[in-house]
Length: 255
Ligand SMILES: Nc1nc2c(ncn2[C@@H]2O[C@H](COP(=O)(O)OP(=O)(O)O)[C@@H](O)[C@H]2O)c(=O)[nH]1
Ligand SMILES: [Mg+2]
Image (cartoon, rainbow, N blue to C red; front, side):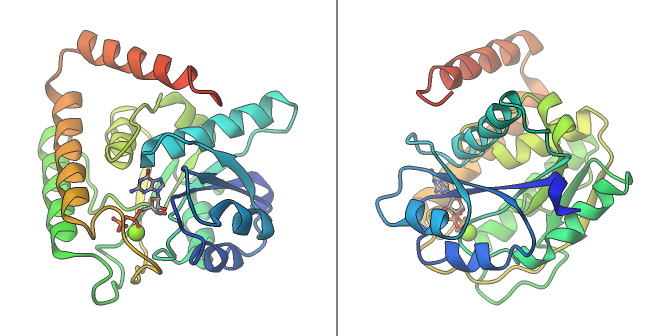
């Protein structure tokens, strides 16, 4: 079953946690670690752990995820069969990679196109998610429900999506809007979405986003902006923004 699955792991200075993540991805043959300009041994430990390492020197969570998708496109163009499912998870060992099959099975069984791991429904280790992150998630999910009739309880990083469906979403966000963009677009595209509870633990190493004041403010602002953009921005302007970011992306040395 794992033959048809590719995992994409964005990583910024996660040399300490990444080996634990890779060790817990049982039987998965295709793992892409996107090294986001790390200054530690992230790329080396990823390669040692059997992952394909691609570089995205320009920072940003979404930029790293987009680079992972571009890599899948490159492999497919070179003659490899496209994957059925893409799984995203973080490099910090907060997610439980051993639960991957629970996210993937509903898609391979044809019951869903998008399976979101919800930390709000799962068991969270004390201190794994800071308060601002819990509250921010609640607000974002409330707004998605009111504005898009989208029923989610989390914006969690651990998620699986049918590759074909993901390509159809034309993802563009290069930083903190990535997760919510996928959820809004999945709902609007009529994908069959499913949430399952996933456990979440304290990360190994330093948080770069929700554990820092600046990261939390920036992430919160970008998430609210993304909701407003897809709900209120005239489609032409949203489309122009989309084209601009795709052009920027394809100008990247790796694009
Ligand atoms: N902040 C940040 N994280 C990145 C970037 N690229 C990849 N990541 C990864 O995104 C994941 C989430 O970041 P993390 O610091 O754990 O954020 P937190 O979960 O909110 O504390 C980790 O796997 C990071 O290594 C980037 O440019 N900025
Ligand atoms: Mg984290």
